[in-house]
Image 1 (tube, rainbow, N blue to C red):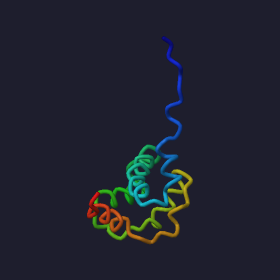
Image 2 (image 1 turned 45 degrees about the horizontal axis):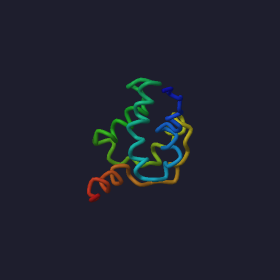
Image 3 (image 1 turned 30 degrees about the horizontal axis):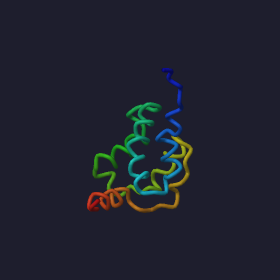
Image 4 (image 1 turned 90 degrees about the vertical axis):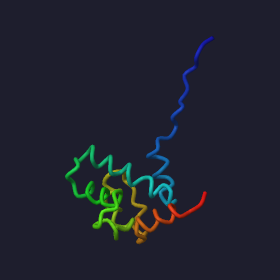
Length: 102
């Protein structure tokens, strides 16, 4: 019996999120991932890290953050400019998922 090598990872989560960033599920899921990229690249004292942390940890200063507010961070971190027209608050979209029955 021989094992044949396969390419089982044809797409990374980043590729999938970038392709589907117009879906709310990917937008919400990507916030934590982008924050971790910022932390690795710039450290936990950067403005982008603090902004994303405010959203994730429901801090007072993150209550009114929109996806549009995150657009520059997404451009800088993953080259994605798909949030520029979305003025919805991230928390409102997250709350929508929290109240949804699956």
